[in-house]
Length: 265
Image (cartoon, rainbow, N blue to C red; front, side):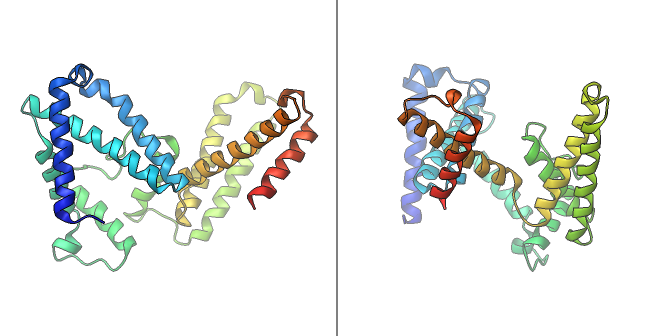
């Protein structure tokens, strides 16, 4: 690993390159906060995918792409004297110190759960911070992540199940209600209520995952990747037979699916 001096030198090099590109590259010079926004979202998603795949080299690469965007925004901010990279670093440093009174102050926290509860209390006291418990949750978060964050935040102020096992009755209740909506004789006319019951069921499952310290978004993405690998195997095997999957029967595809599962074991 690199020394702190080498790390600072590498960061300074990045800042110098950004200054140079902003001055001499037509594309970089043209960019604004708004034009970079979608790219930033894409880079964050690519980093999240690399993390799911546990590809350390790819994680380092994607972190660099995300860091570039941080530096880019700071450079644009400095050109209008609104803020620069020092402001960005100092503001997050000040926030970290303020939100960790158990490290930099006199509060006590024995474990991660104590820290989470302390954070919610501190955020409500923070100058310019949240006025309500749920205020800090971004509307732009993916629904699964947002549900988890909502549940986590209210749990940190005491609104939670006394025993995590109790959540299963709620999950079963929501499954029954969702199934009843779908089986209703007039189900085709009740899409709104069906969606509502499906939402309630998903919310309950996400809550169960949280109580058992599982991240539902990570879990679903791992299943997505697993499904992609297995279905790709079906297509590859079909191609080797000179066929397309659309020409195969369901039983044939299921047999190849089971082969793919065995290969992964």
